[in-house]
Image 1 (tube, protein in one colour):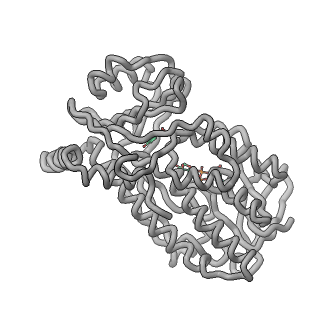
Image 2 (cartoon, helix red, strand yellow):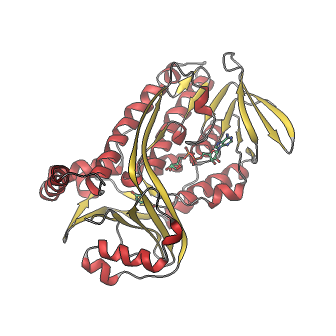
Image 3 (cartoon, helix red, strand yellow):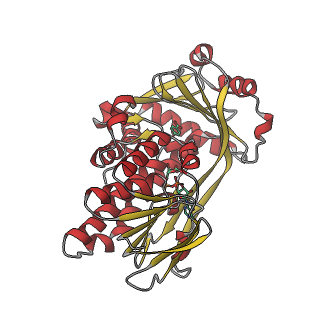
Length: 390
Ligand code: APR
Ligand code: PHB
């Protein structure tokens, strides 16, 4: 088989890239090791920056988002009995949109299929060959048969545990990482959200977050130990612990019900650089992970795809120009490091660290105090939350 751009992974990164290239008349093939049902079944976050919404509009997949997405002009931060609303619209003129990553993935898959795109699921043992040539290839096993896909370029959109990052030579690859000593226990429930905006809570028993997917479906998280046993968390125990951590008004009014999904996610900050080696380009979780406290994971994947689709389109449609390709890694990392900083800052300010000294705790409380009392600090949080420019 032959294509212009071979894409490993049909998560939001791979799918958005394939759709944008298609609209530019550039051919691509997606190789995904899992089934379509598995890809669509993953529960992930769902706060979209304006930049991501604009990218989805440009890709022609924003129709359902515009109908069902919840536009939020603010969010709240709580600690003790204090609650401060951060007015995103006032400080930035911008908003965020709550729309599940699962829905984004579904809309993109529908669009690829409607356009006759080539998505090969259950492609096992994907490997990259001839990366030192101008026509690298992807080899893989499909239905027991070895296949070979020759490409001009390869996009490694295969997430944190994918294969593509391994093809950046060891002597070139630099990894920057922080693993946090706690996790997030999250549930999804068919209950009315406790608030029409997100609530982030710093509590002495640990962090909590109230989010939603729709006016009738809620998403709640509480900080837990990273090696917590999910079996020990009945729904009742979850609701009890969440209500202890919430401000009293929210704790009294929260609607509770059976969880339809319950899982624990580790928290990590991770950056791999460079994000390009010859004709291989990494994008999304394949190159970086943020702790979810800043709601940046999906949005960073979208900004990578902004730079990568621009670079590939310029190459194919503007006389093989390579300036955007040559600056791809630098362009992405400039925005990635800032989003990593914001996500680390939100995580450090809002979580309980097991080995926290009284000085650390004092710093945390001073950080929150300053945030609550300073318009400038709130404006800075707002500017980062709605998304820094591409
Ligand atoms: N071969 C083929 N496909 C693979 C391989 C492989 N060796 N390894 C992983 N994949 C697939 C995964 O099954 C998954 O469907 O690559 C896809 C990667 O998708 P994501 O992990 O969703 O990564 P990305 O598209 O970059 O999206 C980033 O996902 O985790 C969230 O918070 C993150 O929101 C961010 C978004
Ligand atoms: C979510 O809705 O799942 C969500 C929202 C905001 C975050 C993290 C997760 O910061």
